[in-house]
Image (cartoon, rainbow, N blue to C red; front, side, top):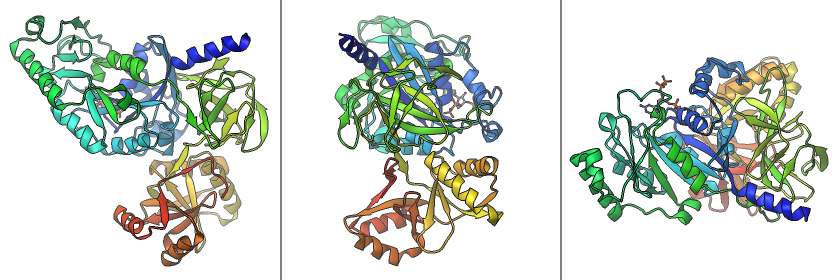
Amino acid sequence: MQNQSLLAELKRETARRRTFAIISHPDAGKTTLTEKLLLFGGAIAMAGAIKAKKAGRHATSDWMAIERERGISVTSSVMNFDFNGCAINLLDTPGHQDFSEDTYRVLTAVDSALMVIDSVKGVEAQTKKLMDVCRLRDTPIITFINKLDRDGRSPFELLDDIEQSLGIEAAPLSWPIGMGKLFKGVYDLRQARLRFFAGQEGQTGRDARPREAVVLQGLDDPALDELLGDTAAGELRRDVELLDGAGYPFDMDRYLSGKQTPVFFGSAINNFGVKELLEAVADLAPAPRPRRADVRDVSPLEEQFSGVVFKIQANMDAAHRDRVAFVRICSGRFSRGMKLRHHRLGKDFKASNAILFMAQERSGVEEAWPGDIIGIPNHGTLNVGDSLTAGEPLRFLGIPHFAPEHFRRVQIRNPFKAKQLEKGLAQLSEEGAIQFFRPVTGGGVLLGAVGALQFEVIAERLASEYDVEVELVGTKYNAARWLFAESKEPLDKLAREEPMAMVTDAAGYRVMMFTSQWMMERTIEKWTAIRFEATRECADTTL
Ligand code: G4P
């Protein structure tokens, strides 16, 4: 009987979870949108809190001097709030140009993503990279085209850009009326509602609330002409007619399989279109779905708890000096103090001090459900990619290392500290903070990162936590791939031909570095017996 009620609760709680992250190119408006979403969700009471953090004015959650100095978020965090009956988990991703592997890995822990695009700039470089990561798991994506209060590109052009640059169908669910100074609002294509933009005067401040929407009887409703004026009403009708002929109609299955993105228009800074976006996340975005493990797929509705570590954050709070493993719950109910099996180590432990991140505060978790993220403080026992279960031996897949795009040679200032350096690099790489490689021929160590800022973070942490001063010297390499083959023979042959570019990663897997994309493509074409992989499962720690 008790089991029945637990299962019913598990079903209910799982169905209302929405775990997502926002992806965007820097400056598209991710921080602004995050703040507005939190405002609507009631998670923060005042606009400005998140922006202030970004600008370093109230850096209460900043955990390193470097973050404060630069006024950017080196780490990601988790925010949760309730909206329309849904329990929303919003995972923040560092959006600065110099982002890290963490940014990518956060995307492996979510069920969907929200993509923000600047209406003036269209799809930008970072968006493309993040989209590639989403594609690894066919993550469903909702698109928000931001900054409609500025003179940007035409909405048709923007849809075309998304389709061409990102290779995904764009299906508008709302349509903008004018832009810049002439921006009048958006028309909700699904519900035939017209939402007005308050305009330049008066309500454009950060706390402005948009006016209520007007419900129309479709586009032929004469009220449309009265409300918008003949010209804008005529334009809207023409646009929608064009869309009917040329655009993609929204298809839930195509969205859920990552082939199509529903598109919304708005202006985050003016609070315009944000509520509709949140409603779309609640209505359309998927609840937790089964997750792949080595032995089988695990359904979130399984009674037994399971979860996977996708991120380690060290020394988040100078007062705590701790290391927190972020665990995505994959199945079952988590309750405080429950016994968990750590499969890599083959040990059981009690999760009595698990924490939940609520805005900038930490609070104890009594229970949590699939889709939720819990933090487990530890002293180095939990690494990225580790699986935790109630007992069943399984290893979740889909939390990878990503091929670095930046490399540095490590030069140690004091050779007597070589041991500390080894220890520091081993621990930092297990945390997922950096990858290190050893040349197949010759000595030394190379560091690899997807964002150059990771090097500064590592140099600072090696100095402050391991007392090792290092100099990081640039190299000519800017791409890498893991090498796999059916037999050793082609790998050995390639190593003989390109000895300088061959390295092994921390777990001993072979990696080849390249000096250009072109060189990489040429090599891949030539060596058909070798698989060149852009990712490697974190859980694969032994060959
Ligand atoms: P990010 O996290 O993606 O990097 O972007 P962020 O929200 O910080 O926004 C980047 C800039 O774009 C900010 O301006 C922000 O105010 C502005 N912005 C965000 N949404 C809108 C919008 O809907 N319309 C317009 N016109 N601008 C928008 P800033 O000058 O860099 O910062 P601030 O001085 O406004 O704080």
